Length: 213
Image (cartoon, rainbow, N blue to C red; front, side):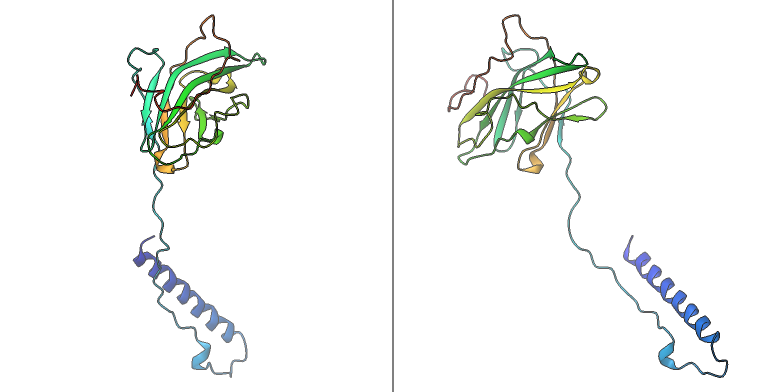
């Protein structure tokens, strides 16, 4: 509502109060005169902004390019203070027949000299209907936590989702800096015959991504 409309609404309310006051006084002693103080006087009020700004939506990557020499479902996402490398995304059957496990083999590289956070809450899957799914608590314990300057952290994180939602998946990554939020499409593949979902590796060193950065 603009300031001009705000003024109009307040004036209208004041007029209503005046009419109600007159009616109430008229219903009393007919011989009683209205004093000037008994009549309500409309008062002009100008609304004052309280500040704030509109929210900023995530950066959307709808057609990510695979890494040079990498798998078809790999990709790289470059943010202001970090780089996400998704080496692969696989789908496996869950214990519950109506669900599947989506495993994301990912590397987080800190591209600054300051430490950054890496929390489980930063990662969510978004299904085709807009439903979001949190991670399953079977990722490596030492994958999450603070990542030092110019260091990297890698691991396999998994999400259990309904089988019906396993198509057109996006990874929503929302770090501690909200404006760095990114929504990137995932190309989900099947696991390789020798790949075991319990086989996970966690690394932290400076040159882990030298071949892809």
